[in-house]
Image 1: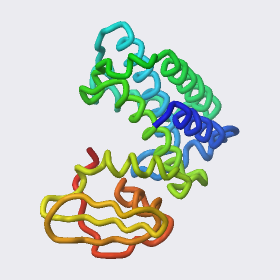
Image 2 (image 1 turned 30 degrees about the horizontal axis):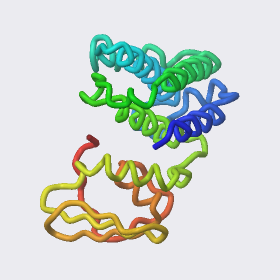
Image 3 (image 1 turned 90 degrees about the vertical axis):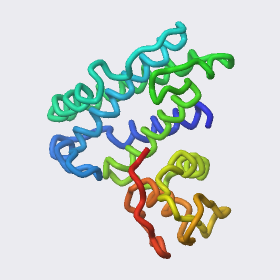
Image 4 (image 1 turned 30 degrees about the vertical axis):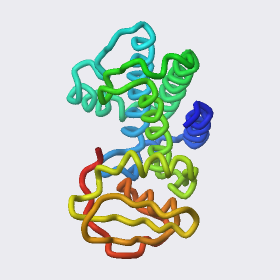
Amino acid sequence: MALIDVKTAAARMSSLVAGLDEATARGDSELPGWTRGHLITHVANFSRAFTRQVEYALRGELVEVYDGGRPARDAAIEAGAGRPAAVLVDDLNEAVTALLAAWDRVGPDDWSRPISHRNSTLAHGIDATWRELEIHTSDLGLGATPDEWPASFCAHLLDFLRPRTPNGVHLVLRPSDSPVWENGTGEEHVLTGTLTALTAWYAGRPPTTAVEGPIPELLPYP
């Protein structure tokens, strides 16, 4: 992953929400129970939280991702989801721009600095930023789909999601347009389709083209 990948994903999301109207903002996203207002608020709040993760890490300090933890995070999303469409878009763009500026300040020797998010490092944190922007751009339901995910992102996401493979399952993804990917041991489940379709399925998103084979029930998103 390179910072340019994150900036490309951010630009794609910003372009997609430009000119968002009220009806569209209140419409359903691809995430059950969330409108687009919920999703845009979540990405903006995530961006602010991660800007703080980066800033504190560069000072050699740790800070909670969200003050008040998951309950406060969820409450903030509910509180912000119904704001006017123009306010939602401005908030998203400002928050993401600030996050990208924070990532720009990370030097070559800083990537191993610890952060509170998943008890990981800045290197893992920028990967998390990439996932949030790429996946949620598709989740907005505004025309972008997982078919637009770059192959490099699919490879990263498949590896991140390895814990979803159930015990006793040897999962074999055999894309028509990239090398075979495997995970787990046990009963073999060979699935075929395009790389983006298989990755979307593994990420719990509806693929736009068929995934064929004996599909196992996956474990929760890690």
